[in-house]
Amino acid sequence: MTQEVAIITGAARGIGRAIAQNLAGAGYAVVINDVLSLTDTVNALTRTSAGTKAIAIEGDVLNASIRQKMVEAAQTAGSVAALVNNAFQEVRGSFLDLSDDDWMHTWSATFQSAVRMSRAVLPLMRARNQGSIVNVSSVHAVGAGEYFAPYDTAKAAMNALTRSLALEFGPDGIRVNAVMPGLIITERNRERWETQPDEYQAVQCAYPLRRAGHPEEVADVVGFLVSEAARFVTGAAIPVDGGLLAGLSETTALWMVQNREQHDV
Ligand SMILES: NC(=O)c1ccc[n+]([C@@H]2O[C@H](COP(=O)([O-])OP(=O)(O)OC[C@H]3O[C@@H](n4cnc5c(N)ncnc54)[C@H](O)[C@@H]3O)[C@@H](O)[C@H]2O)c1
Image: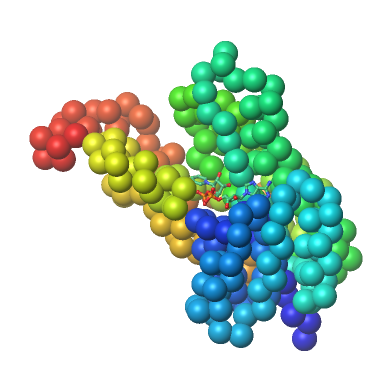
């Protein structure tokens, strides 16, 4: 049987690394990419999934030669069965302070990266009449954060891309879905929340499950979406957000006032 290969962008740390571990655990050979060093991820993969074939391609996913290396590595390892578009970078700020470069930077790394990777793998998936793409979007795709305009709009575009590709490539047996994480504590943001415990506690109160999430909890849903168990799921954007999007913010505000003493917020 052909070895199935999953390509994951932005896998040096955080959610991307957890997704690589999940998919390696499910038996995929993984081609991982990041602008940062992938050594720790490769070590983690070797530790948690002995016998995993992990190919690290370091470099900018926006760069055509890096994408070509990823695709070639994947084809050498087996057949491209899954692509997870996870890489992102963002610039935040007041709308009037953001430059064209700020917008381009966020949109390129967060959205255009997914467009280009999808364009690179879809012909291979189409040739096999099967494949699964998962876009790591965000709750910001449907709700705005203050000073997050480039990120909010890039993630909304990612959800729209998910629907467009699902529609166009469904007849080719290719499924395209998105996950929308809420706050997930990763290496990138841990220090910010640890050093501001009051803010952290207040934010967690907005979540019906009253906590932030873990990278593995996003990876589990991605693992489901690429798997055979999700064979009739396409074009979906699934919140992985502890219920954040289910609630109205006025309800959260009220709850916090009513529970101010009990929860010290
Ligand atoms: N952590 C959260 O709270 C949260 C919430 C919602 C959505 N998300 C989404 O989850 C994904 C991962 O987020 P994270 O928190 O793990 O952040 P992260 O910064 O740890 O992971 C993103 C990775 O992408 C890499 N990257 C950036 N630009 C790249 C490029 N051009 N080429 C290759 N690699 C590139 C970065 O180096 C980084 O390792 C992102 O798409 C993010 O929008 C995260």
